[in-house]
Image (cartoon, rainbow, N blue to C red; front, side):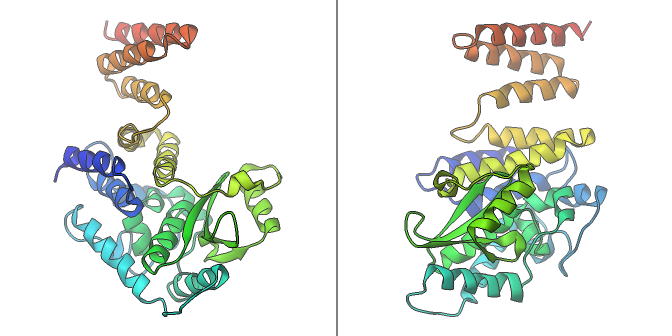
Amino acid sequence: MGRMDNRDRFAEAARDERPDLALLCLLIGVEAAYPGDGPSADEAASTDEAGSQGEAGTQGACAPRSPEATVDSAQIELDRLAGLLPYARGRSPEEWARALERLLGEEHDFRGTNADYRRLDSSLLQAVLGRRRGLPILLSVVWMEVARRAGAPVYGVALPGHFVVGFGDPSGEHVLADPFGGGRLLGSGDLEVLIAGATGRRTGVSHALLQPADPLEIVLRVLNNIRAWAAARPEQSGVRLWALDLSLRLPHHPARLRYERAQLLVERGDFIGGAVEMEAYAEVIAAMEPSAADTVRRAARAARARLN
């Protein structure tokens, strides 16, 4: 499988009636493993502070020779972890949460650190399974996928700036847990502190904030994190480009991503390609935002002028 084949597979998986969250996250990891438009995950990890390493290294036991083989290997690892959960009939939401905390947080030491925010591989599921470290959203994917395989009523909760998981009925009996903190259970006060720490402002926690996140929303948020990581590092523009390309293959995505991609092409020296995409984007928004469309067209003309 080549890079374009991987992107086609990603687009197909995203269009599935019931998108497979683990598969989509793993295909992001496959994309990151291809050199050419930027560093591989290993190379990118080595350019930042390493943070804590698991015994398996950057991609760990989930890194066979080919990038594609990591998908099956990681799925097997998720199955294995789920099989380690002791069987118990009729667990309550809190019992499920504590069982996952013991298995993943205590026995396998999955958790996050501040250093993980500086690593690309903290956003790649294969690497998170290997290092047992990652961003809140990727650790939450591990929690959700292991719990789901074991039969738990589990879902993701996209708090502002911090992702957590819920067990039970979102509209009824439920508990929330923080995989970044090793799976610790969260009370309402804890949620306010998490949000304040991530956003810099103290705010109440509304019922709307605690609704289950859609799998494709989770995938887009993962890709947004990768784009943000790369945007802060101009030398990693190739990483930002492939993250944009995958984002644009999701069935629903912000239209402005097309303009961001066009601007990035210009920054990378593809003036014609960037100008063409700017002009196409201007046509899309012209009816609703004519002044913005004019601004984009001027940017396209400026890009073409850089060829002279």
